[in-house]
Length: 465
Image (cartoon, rainbow, N blue to C red):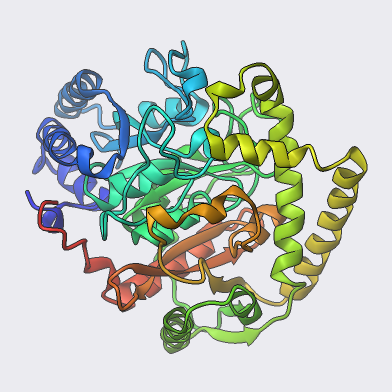
C-alpha cells in the first residue's frame, strides 16, 4: 500500500469495526513500512515488532468475539521515547539512559493500551525533549519526509517523521515550548497541546514541571480528537492533573463556525520575521475561516519576545533542577546541545526565577484580558518552513523567539494544522488557541478548515516512501 492510500485513524477504525480491515494486516503493513523506510527517516529508535503483532492478534480476536473497545482498537501508533513503556527500553534518546527498561507504563500509554491501540515502537526525540537534532547521540535525528535534508521539528521529531512518512497512524508527543505543534507544522500534520493538566504526565520523563504538556499528533483533527479523548483525564499520580470532565471530542467536531470569534495576533508573526509565503498563507487561512462564518478580530498582546524570554528562563531553570545531577556527575553521557542548554541555566539566580514567575502572571493576565471576548486565538505556528538539518546552530540557545511558547506559558489548549506549502514544497502551519479545557472548540475550527481546503489530501512525494 502506498503512502497516499494509507487510511487515517478514523477511517481505519471504522473499517476495523465493520470487519473490513484486519488489525493484524494493518500492523504488518506498518511494520513492513518501518522496515523499508526507517533507515531513511530515523523515526523509531526501538521497534517492538513482536509486541505489536501480539497486540494486533489479541485485538483481532477480541473484536471477532464482540469485545470491541472503541475507535482506537487495533490502531497502530508510535510512542515518543520519553513516555515509559513496561518492558520496553525508554531512553529519552539519551546515552545516559540507554539501558533503561521501565517496569510500568506511563498513565497515558496504559490508557491507550486499554483502548486497544497497538504499540509499534518508541519514537525518536530530542534528548530528554530538550536537546536539539543532535548527531552525537546513539541514534541519528529524525528526517522530514517532505525533504529528508530538513528538520522535522521537535522535540517530538520521530512522531512527526513517523506519521507523515506512513510509519504509524498517530503518535505521542510532549510540548514544553512547542514540541507537539512544531513537528506538526514542519511535518505537515495536526498536533494538539491540550490545556495544562488535561493529560497526565505521570510516567513521562520531566523537563519543566510548570510547562510540560502531553498530547497527540496525527494526520487529521479528527484523529487527534480520537487520541486525545483516550489520553485525557484526571490522574492523581500527576500533581498538576486537573479533575475536569473530558467530553467526546469527536462528537463535537462538526460545528457551524458562524459567529465564532477568532482573535488574530498578527504582530506575533511579524515580530518573528515570518517569510512572505507564511504571511500569505496566514491571510489565506483567515479568509477561509471568514468564509466559514467566523468573525475575525485583531488583538494585541505583549511582545512575542517577552513571552519567549519568560518561558525560556522558567524552562531552563526547571530543566536544570531535573538534570543538574547528571550534568555535574556524568556530562559525557549527555549530548552537546543538551549540555550547553543546561549550562545556560547556571546564568540565572533564584531571584531571576522568581521574577520570571511574577512576569508570567502578568503576561497571563494580559493574555486573558485581551482574549476575553474571543473564542479562539489565531497566529502562525512557525515563521517559515523547516530548516535544513545542517543549519540548526541556533538550537544551542533561545535567541530565536518561538511562536508556540506563549501558549505553554498560559497553559491554553493549542492546535497546529497545515496552512499550505512553501515554494520549496515544505509545509506551513497556523495554530489556534482556546479557552482553558476547551480543546473541543480549537479542534472543531481546525476540522472545519481542514474540510474546506485540500491540504489534508497532500502527502510527501518522495518516491521511495
